Image (cartoon, rainbow, N blue to C red; front, side):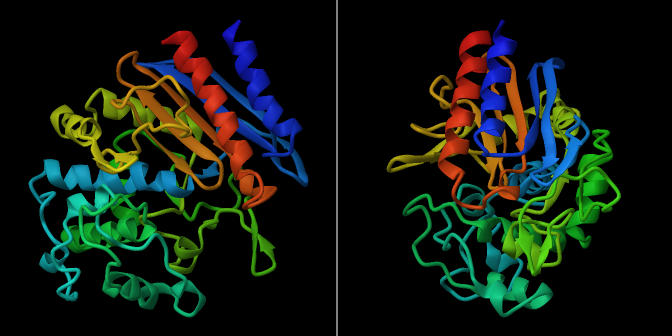
Length: 339
């Protein structure tokens, strides 16, 4: 059975010390084909993982929260993909013509990350990111940047006059019945912890430094969720329960290709050697998170895989290549065996 093979791939990651545990949902259209919880919530906590264990989604925040928020504003006539940063903020001439489209597709020319968190916190840190000048011209290359999505969060707040976490809760999570999706979850919840910072293990606080020092709410990372909630999310997008289908399809069907890199709007596009594996075509879409989370969707077969782990509870850097191999094998099995 293919499910036995999938179990072996996921369990191999636990046995090799890549992650202490994880949750998996394999779906097709509006049905869950397979779901399972593996291992324990942490390397030093033998509490069994459950399907409702909350995981730090890390950069999956970029699609579950930020891209979806932008889609809502576009579909509601409140935002255009070609609005520029100069429409919202006092920024330099080098930055004022960067558009929402450029931010979503990582073609803004912004650097990948900022170390300003070492000195600045909260609103000061956010202002420093918004004012930071690009290091390349727009559409020159695809350079994956957390700064793009932190800036998009600021745009959403500017347009809606709401805090980002409140907007996401009211306009995305509540309508889709995602009761276990939130920024800064209560520590009493069953949460898989990640790495250590400032002498304590992070539980309910973002593993990502920028999201952490922004106060726990950010457009690049910081969202916590469960595999079952993410099933509701994918299902809601596929069946236009939140976003009009034409808007959603325009975001995931357009592919920007520059050099060897490709992106959809907000979403990743499969590429050689990526976490998507070797089967999916360029029309597939997904995203990964640094903590060991991922989601990939195949429009051709209607199949999708949601796989959540807290890899960084064991190691922040050393297990990245091994995590990539686990993801590739898992996705090859599902999309190759069931597609």
